[in-house]
Structures are given as C-alpha cells and as structure tokens.
Length: 173
Image: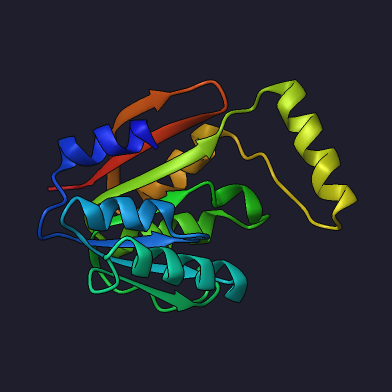
C-alpha cells in the first residue's frame, strides 16, 4: 500500500476519477479517495463489496468512493482518468481482453500490479487455490504489457517488488 500511495502522489489523484477493477475490500479505492479522487470500485464478490462499503463509511469516504457488483471482464467500464488492476489479472485465464479493456477505459493512466513469476510462490499459491477449488494463473509480464499496449497505452514505469511488479502506463499522445 505504501508503494501505491507514493505512486498515487506522483500521479496526482486530486479531482481525478479512479476506476478500481476487482476492488475487493476497497483498500486501494479508499486510498485513492483519501488522496482526493472520486473512486469507483467494481468487484464480483458481494461479500467483499459489503466490506468495502463499510470501510468507506467508517473512513468518512462514502461520498468519494462507490462500489458496484460486476465481473470486470464483462462489465461496462466507464472512462476514467486512472484505471487500476491491482492483483486481478492472475484470476483470469483469458486475461488479455480484460487488460486491453482496462487500458481503453483509461483516459490518462493505467496501473497494473501483477504477480511476479517466482517459482516457489507460484507453486504455493497454485496449491492453496487448488485446495479451495479455485484457479490462479501466472501470465508472463511481457504478455500483460502487450495486452495493455494494444489498448492504446504505453509502459512508462515498472516498480518491481519481491512478489509483484507495478506497471504504470500512460495514454499515448
């Protein structure tokens, strides 16, 4: 979250619209809202959305953050200044259309936090997801970048961490 907070400070979110795809519990949406953005989170899980809405109320950010149920791979994506895909791509086998759609919705900036392909972490996560009856996919970073660029943005920054890399794209001029 500190990395995203620093990045958001550099991007400048005050007065901007932020679309958080696969927002989960709303932490990233609420961070953006606390920095002056109007955040719109979309997630498929009603339970996670309930947590997000409660967190927005408790943080006094309910007017700046709204949460909607939907599958981000097929939901209507409103054009937004900044579009976020934080820890989402790995849940989609057919991720490229999602990433391209997210890029197309970004009027200015697309931020993708994507899992690094670290062998032991991949094995452990695959095992845990299999035990839960779910799937997780580890797509090559270069393919994720290519899908975003097909949506009209260009990669301007990579912020690598141990478990993930934050990719920052800007709309082509």
